[in-house]
Length: 183
Image 1 (cartoon, one colour):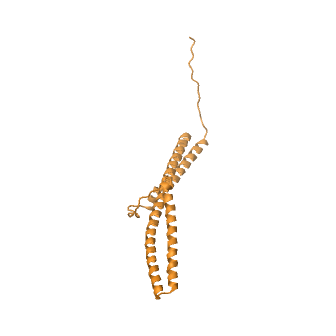
Image 2 (image 1 turned 60 degrees about the vertical axis):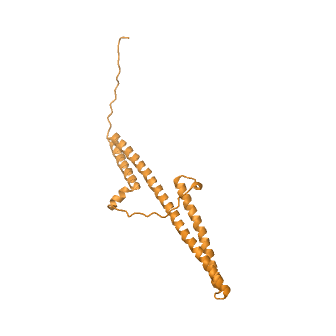
Image 3 (image 1 turned 90 degrees about the vertical axis):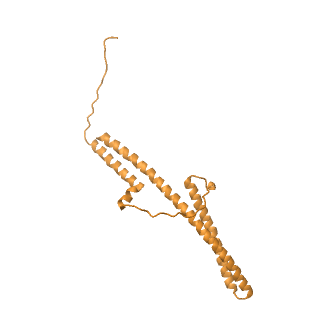
Protein backbone atom coordinates (compact mmCIF):
# COMPACT_ATOMS: atom_id res chain seq x y z
CA UNK A 1 0.00 0.00 0.00
CA UNK A 2 2.99 2.33 0.44
CA UNK A 3 3.55 2.83 -3.28
CA UNK A 4 -0.17 3.08 -4.00
CA UNK A 5 -0.54 5.78 -1.34
CA UNK A 6 2.56 7.61 -2.66
CA UNK A 7 1.08 7.62 -6.17
CA UNK A 8 -2.24 8.82 -4.78
CA UNK A 9 -0.49 11.64 -2.87
CA UNK A 10 1.32 12.70 -6.07
CA UNK A 11 -1.96 12.69 -8.01
CA UNK A 12 -3.64 14.86 -5.36
CA UNK A 13 -0.71 17.31 -5.38
CA UNK A 14 -1.05 17.50 -9.16
CA UNK A 15 -4.78 18.16 -8.85
CA UNK A 16 -4.03 20.85 -6.24
CA UNK A 17 -1.71 22.57 -8.74
CA UNK A 18 -4.44 22.48 -11.39
CA UNK A 19 -6.81 24.10 -8.89
CA UNK A 20 -4.09 26.67 -8.18
CA UNK A 21 -4.04 27.49 -11.89
CA UNK A 22 -7.83 27.83 -11.90
CA UNK A 23 -7.64 30.05 -8.83
CA UNK A 24 -5.13 32.31 -10.59
CA UNK A 25 -7.39 32.45 -13.67
CA UNK A 26 -10.41 33.40 -11.55
CA UNK A 27 -8.38 36.04 -9.69
CA UNK A 28 -7.08 37.51 -12.96
CA UNK A 29 -10.58 37.60 -14.42
CA UNK A 30 -11.94 39.27 -11.28
CA UNK A 31 -9.22 41.93 -11.38
CA UNK A 32 -9.90 42.53 -15.07
CA UNK A 33 -13.62 42.95 -14.47
CA UNK A 34 -13.01 45.34 -11.59
CA UNK A 35 -10.63 47.43 -13.70
CA UNK A 36 -13.14 47.49 -16.58
CA UNK A 37 -15.92 48.59 -14.25
CA UNK A 38 -13.64 51.30 -12.87
CA UNK A 39 -13.07 52.61 -16.41
CA UNK A 40 -16.79 52.69 -17.18
CA UNK A 41 -17.73 54.31 -13.85
CA UNK A 42 -15.04 56.97 -14.30
CA UNK A 43 -16.27 57.64 -17.84
CA UNK A 44 -19.79 58.18 -16.53
CA UNK A 45 -18.55 60.42 -13.73
CA UNK A 46 -16.54 62.45 -16.25
CA UNK A 47 -19.61 62.89 -18.47
CA UNK A 48 -21.61 64.13 -15.51
CA UNK A 49 -18.78 66.37 -14.37
CA UNK A 50 -18.37 67.89 -17.85
CA UNK A 51 -22.07 68.77 -17.87
CA UNK A 52 -21.66 70.26 -14.40
CA UNK A 53 -18.66 72.32 -15.57
CA UNK A 54 -20.73 73.70 -18.45
CA UNK A 55 -23.53 74.65 -16.06
CA UNK A 56 -21.08 76.29 -13.67
CA UNK A 57 -19.57 78.22 -16.58
CA UNK A 58 -23.00 79.53 -17.53
CA UNK A 59 -23.77 80.34 -13.91
CA UNK A 60 -20.48 82.22 -13.62
CA UNK A 61 -21.34 84.26 -16.72
CA UNK A 62 -24.81 85.09 -15.36
CA UNK A 63 -23.50 86.03 -11.90
CA UNK A 64 -20.79 88.18 -13.54
CA UNK A 65 -23.43 90.00 -15.59
CA UNK A 66 -25.52 90.48 -12.44
CA UNK A 67 -22.46 91.84 -10.63
CA UNK A 68 -21.75 94.32 -13.44
CA UNK A 69 -25.36 95.49 -13.32
CA UNK A 70 -25.21 95.81 -9.54
CA UNK A 71 -27.69 93.09 -8.56
CA UNK A 72 -25.06 90.68 -7.22
CA UNK A 73 -22.04 90.90 -4.94
CA UNK A 74 -18.41 90.27 -5.68
CA UNK A 75 -18.52 87.49 -3.07
CA UNK A 76 -21.06 85.53 -5.14
CA UNK A 77 -18.85 85.86 -8.22
CA UNK A 78 -15.79 84.68 -6.30
CA UNK A 79 -17.68 81.72 -4.80
CA UNK A 80 -18.98 80.55 -8.20
CA UNK A 81 -15.54 81.06 -9.77
CA UNK A 82 -13.92 79.05 -6.96
CA UNK A 83 -16.43 76.23 -7.37
CA UNK A 84 -15.90 76.30 -11.15
CA UNK A 85 -12.11 75.91 -10.76
CA UNK A 86 -12.45 73.17 -8.11
CA UNK A 87 -14.76 71.24 -10.42
CA UNK A 88 -12.35 71.58 -13.33
CA UNK A 89 -9.52 70.33 -11.09
CA UNK A 90 -11.66 67.34 -10.12
CA UNK A 91 -12.14 66.58 -13.81
CA UNK A 92 -8.36 66.40 -14.22
CA UNK A 93 -8.14 63.95 -11.32
CA UNK A 94 -10.88 61.79 -12.80
CA UNK A 95 -9.14 61.74 -16.19
CA UNK A 96 -5.92 60.62 -14.50
CA UNK A 97 -7.78 57.90 -12.57
CA UNK A 98 -9.47 56.75 -15.79
CA UNK A 99 -6.09 56.55 -17.51
CA UNK A 100 -4.74 54.45 -14.62
CA UNK A 101 -7.76 52.11 -14.85
CA UNK A 102 -7.34 51.78 -18.63
CA UNK A 103 -3.67 50.93 -18.11
CA UNK A 104 -4.67 48.27 -15.55
CA UNK A 105 -7.02 46.72 -18.11
CA UNK A 106 -4.29 46.73 -20.75
CA UNK A 107 -1.72 45.17 -18.44
CA UNK A 108 -4.14 42.48 -17.25
CA UNK A 109 -4.82 41.66 -20.89
CA UNK A 110 -1.08 41.47 -21.55
CA UNK A 111 -1.01 44.46 -23.88
CA UNK A 112 1.15 47.55 -23.66
CA UNK A 113 -0.87 50.41 -22.16
CA UNK A 114 -0.24 52.58 -25.20
CA UNK A 115 -2.15 50.05 -27.35
CA UNK A 116 -5.15 49.96 -25.04
CA UNK A 117 -8.23 50.85 -27.03
CA UNK A 118 -11.34 50.12 -25.03
CA UNK A 119 -14.42 50.50 -27.12
CA UNK A 120 -16.77 53.16 -25.86
CA UNK A 121 -19.68 51.81 -23.94
CA UNK A 122 -21.69 51.90 -20.81
CA UNK A 123 -21.88 49.81 -17.70
CA UNK A 124 -23.21 46.34 -18.27
CA UNK A 125 -26.58 45.29 -16.97
CA UNK A 126 -25.73 42.39 -14.72
CA UNK A 127 -28.47 39.76 -14.48
CA UNK A 128 -29.65 38.49 -11.15
CA UNK A 129 -27.88 35.33 -10.03
CA UNK A 130 -30.35 32.49 -10.19
CA UNK A 131 -29.97 29.04 -8.69
CA UNK A 132 -27.06 29.74 -6.40
CA UNK A 133 -27.87 26.69 -4.30
CA UNK A 134 -26.86 25.94 -0.77
CA UNK A 135 -24.01 27.87 0.89
CA UNK A 136 -21.93 24.69 1.01
CA UNK A 137 -22.33 24.38 -2.77
CA UNK A 138 -20.97 27.91 -3.16
CA UNK A 139 -17.88 26.91 -1.22
CA UNK A 140 -17.16 23.94 -3.46
CA UNK A 141 -17.28 26.21 -6.53
CA UNK A 142 -14.39 28.29 -5.25
CA UNK A 143 -11.07 27.29 -6.80
CA UNK A 144 -9.08 28.14 -3.67
CA UNK A 145 -11.29 25.88 -1.54
CA UNK A 146 -10.96 23.04 -4.07
CA UNK A 147 -7.17 23.53 -4.11
CA UNK A 148 -6.99 23.27 -0.34
CA UNK A 149 -9.21 20.19 -0.39
CA UNK A 150 -6.84 18.56 -2.89
CA UNK A 151 -3.84 19.49 -0.73
CA UNK A 152 -5.59 17.93 2.25
CA UNK A 153 -6.24 14.74 0.25
CA UNK A 154 -2.54 14.67 -0.75
CA UNK A 155 -1.52 15.04 2.90
CA UNK A 156 -3.86 12.20 3.92
CA UNK A 157 -2.36 9.98 1.20
CA UNK A 158 1.16 10.93 2.35
CA UNK A 159 0.20 9.92 5.89
CA UNK A 160 -0.99 6.58 4.52
CA UNK A 161 2.32 6.13 2.75
CA UNK A 162 4.23 6.98 5.93
CA UNK A 163 2.03 4.56 7.86
CA UNK A 164 3.04 1.81 5.45
CA UNK A 165 6.71 2.62 6.16
CA UNK A 166 6.16 1.55 9.77
CA UNK A 167 5.66 -2.05 8.75
CA UNK A 168 8.48 -4.35 7.72
CA UNK A 169 9.14 -4.74 4.03
CA UNK A 170 9.72 -7.95 2.27
CA UNK A 171 11.50 -7.79 -1.00
CA UNK A 172 12.52 -10.70 -3.14
CA UNK A 173 15.37 -10.54 -5.49
CA UNK A 174 16.66 -13.19 -7.77
CA UNK A 175 19.02 -13.93 -10.55
CA UNK A 176 18.03 -15.42 -13.86
CA UNK A 177 20.67 -16.52 -16.30
CA UNK A 178 21.10 -19.02 -19.08
CA UNK A 179 24.05 -21.30 -19.03
CA UNK A 180 25.18 -23.76 -21.63
CA UNK A 181 28.12 -26.02 -22.22
CA UNK A 182 28.01 -25.65 -25.99
CA UNK A 183 29.46 -22.76 -27.84
